[in-house]
Structures are given as C-alpha cells and as structure tokens.
Image 1 (cartoon, rainbow, N blue to C red):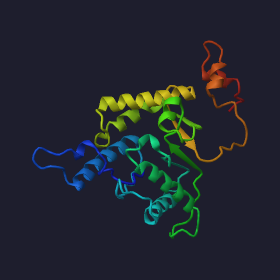
Image 2 (spheres, one colour; image 1 turned 90 degrees about the vertical axis):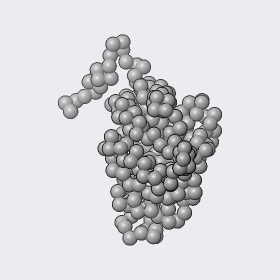
Image 3 (cartoon, rainbow, N blue to C red; image 1 turned 45 degrees about the horizontal axis):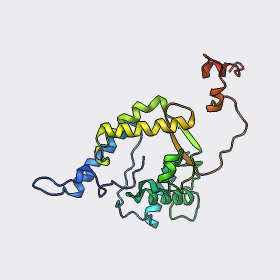
Image 4 (cartoon, one colour; image 1 turned 60 degrees about the vertical axis):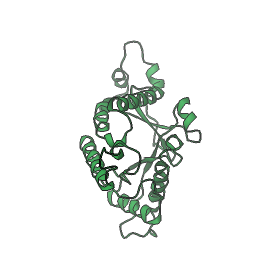
Amino acid sequence: MVPVTYGARHTNPFLKPGKESGHPPLEDVKARKLKEIERACGILEVELHQLDFKDQLFMGTHEEVQALVDIIRDFRPDIVITHHPIDTAFADQPDHATVGAAVLRAVKYANEWGADSRKPAFQVNSVLLWPARYEIAMFRVTPYMTPANYYVDISAVTDIKRRAMRCLEGSMLMTQDQTEEQFAAHDATAGRAAGVRHAEAYVHTAPIVVKHLSRREIGPSLQMLLPPGWTEEDYLKLFRHGD
C-alpha cells in the first residue's frame, strides 16, 4: 500500500482547533494519521510504503512520478490499483485525480529504460481505476467516467474491510457507524451490479485477454440458469474431469 501523502492538510477531525492551543501542529496530525494507516495495514496484512508529498499541493511533478516509478520497479506488482484520473465524484479532494494521472504515468515510465532510474525496468500487467461508474446514481456524480468493467467479489472479506476502515478515524468526516453504513451500501450496490452479495467495481485500463473461454467462472447470467435448489458448486461438478 502506497499512500502518496498523509492527507494532513485535508479537512479531518484531527485539524479541529483545541480549546486553548488552536490547530495542532501539522507533524502531530501526520503522526496520528500514520498510526491509523499502520493499524489498517496490519489488519489487511499488507506492507506499507508511506510517501510524504504535500496533499492539496500534489501536482505529479517529475520527481513525484519518479518516486512512484522506483516503487513499481522495486516491488514489481502484477496489478496496480489507483484513483481514476477523472475523479469528479470527489471534487473536494483534487489530489485523487492527480494521483491517478501520476500513477498511470509511472506505470508507463517504469517499463522505459530512459526513465531516470538505475533500477531494472518492469511492465505492470494490469491497472485498475477507482471509482468506476456502475449504476445511474454514480453517473450523476461522475458523468465522464468509464463504466465499470471489472468486479471483485469481496463477500467473504467484508468484515476484514470493515475492521480496517474503522482505523481511519482521521480520514473520515463521519462517525464510525456512518462510515460503515456508507461503505456497506456502496459494496452491496456494486454487488448487485455484479450478481454477488458485495463487490468492488473498477475500470480495467486495457482489454482483458484470455487464452480460452471457460464455463468455470460463474457470473450473474449463469447463476440465473441454475435449477431450483442448485448451488454454484453443484453446477461446477458438471464440468470437472478428475481434477
């Protein structure tokens, strides 16, 4: 996980003035937010690589993109997930769109030997953008965004996601109950679009190419064809050949 900034300048509860001391020092806010993201990463069991670029002032400069290039070349990820470069749904936080554009540039430059880096070049296989338009309400706030074409079924891990989100008190302007309610509704809506209980919707930036068609991957259309009382496991047994 690579937070590009601490988000310390963006409006959050940690910046509210105290009764006597006024606004807390920026470094104190950053320290508190670092503890939050560390706790969340611990729950998700992921490695944290925290960058310290200035939020609200992030411009995706050459130096900032180069830092992302080096991280990509070091970690060599199969999949990169980042913000959508046209993120109009969150106009109050313009860094989202800027980060998305910077990451897309970094993915491109990571595979070019001419980039200012001594690290071996690396080509990322897939890039997923969030948020994605997957229903009418989403279109109203993101009219220029590409419709979702890649859904991840997170039904089995929603509790883990919920526990990680609880750690991010300083990044939310809502209570924990409100935050959980909003994300649960979001995941359930995307799930309905994908034919599962809970899902996350993304835009895959390149054509999805497979070597052969497979009936093993159950989607909404196949689920609707299941006979009454059948489960997906019952259906899959029809296509197993001793594997």
